[in-house]
Figure 1 (cartoon, one colour):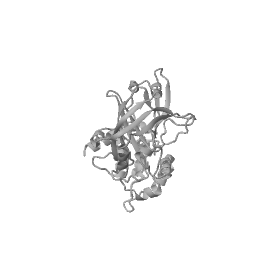
Figure 2: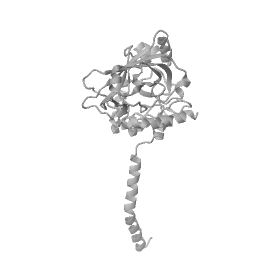
Figure 3: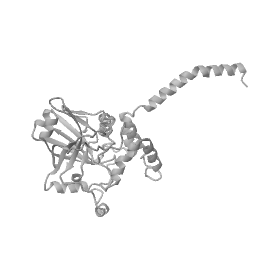
Length: 337
């Protein structure tokens, strides 16, 4: 049994140490509250979908395409960039299926992606778009949590519904994109779905006036999803043969438009759908996909939505601001194959 004097000494040490312990706890709390860094964001993708040699951490399954972009007079009015003074710009892009599994089925109810780089040999403009008008996370914290909640259970090989429910309780925006995806079957073609930027950008004209917008690629073929018969009968890899067949007869075309925000629409939350300002979208140009590109042409490219020409500025959307560094981590990992 310890002597009373010894016990008192221990109490004095504990009391004197309390402020330091409290401060340490506060530091630990602050540290744990720090936003996920780019490595942690890519780790979350790899943790959910696996790490596949030579593949992108997100949108691992895809096809390189080539074509041209024709800027509109409206785009030249909205943005002061000399890039858009050209009547036609070279375009290289990548069409893809969402997720980090290169073996995913083309019938999966996930987003389709369109990443595009247009340029004149000196200036470039990257667009990164998906086939739903919202992203699945509003912040890097929500991004990582969303993915971690979907790590397959070793026993069932499926995500745990309780973990998904817990994520949605903490980050309600996590329900928005999945609800849209569940409302329809997969796109019938890469050419028959719209693509959305989700993030907002400011177009600055020659007088310094700014116009905020989200971007949409509207398909000339209209929006078409698989019907029940096609969803049941098509093979898991039908998108590229279907696109090849289309391109054999004509270019695949889209119109790029700018959707302006309404009074309640957020410039910094990509998980919330815009209601719009009641005005018709502004036509910014026409994309013509004319052929398939060699995989090597896109493998060395990281499409970064903050790679912008003069006259287009990014918003303070935390997801948008996190993308470039996370893409760099993913690029380094696939180059290390």
